[in-house]
Length: 168
Image: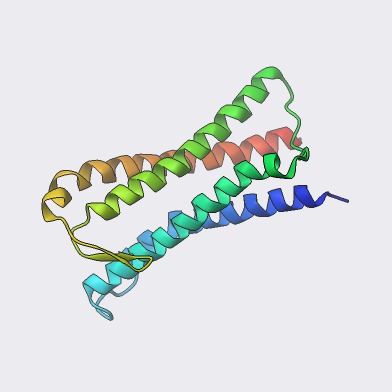
């Protein structure tokens, strides 16, 4: 029987994984595949960005909880045993890169919201549009956000195949 700490750790892992995958696939779908003429362009974009932001906040909170939980619970959570020192280093670097990407995506996401061209409301807070920043800062921040998005897809693949390798 698995310990309660292990079950909580796995639940936090899979909740984070589900939220991350949902975020990676949902915003583009909402922006490009849903008929925006139903609500109007501004409200349509507002809804898509707000949903993305709310899920992003939840993802960051679950990820932080997963990072802090082993220290708070003071229990050893069983992990896959590395096959060598190089494998252990690869696991550590992959996880650091995954966490770095998640938190960097959150930071660039906040920067994108603060430099958007239309008024946005996130968690009941209205953020005024900034046309000058939109044309100046937004494209640069968006490019970084997209590079991080591609990097996290690659890291998810590396993580998946790494688990398959470790379990064989």
